[in-house]
Amino acid sequence: MAENSGITAESLEDIIRERLAATYVSVVDNSGGCGQIFEAVIVSPQFEGKTSLAKSRLVNTLLKEEIAVIHAWSNKTYTPAQWEKLKEKEAAEA
Image 1 (cartoon, rainbow, N blue to C red):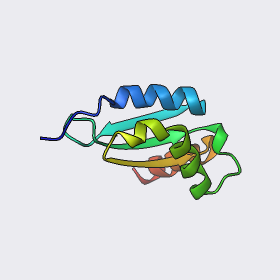
Image 2 (tube, one colour):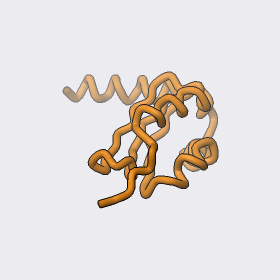
Image 3 (cartoon, helix red, strand yellow):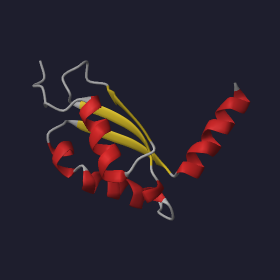
């Protein structure tokens, strides 16, 4: 059984909101509760004008300590405008 990292989806959401001034954050623990595998969707105005790689680097830099104690981390990052466009597209396809 994997060791618990002490990191939770809720704690990551709080940290991301605080450090990135995120307007939307969703973090899912895909490890079965042991806090080792997380994926996130992050919407922040701090991503404006940044490439996907730059956005990912920003997130990873700001979460360096948290990421160091978990096994796997993946994230999708959007500006508020990109997020709205994505939601409109999803609604149109539904």
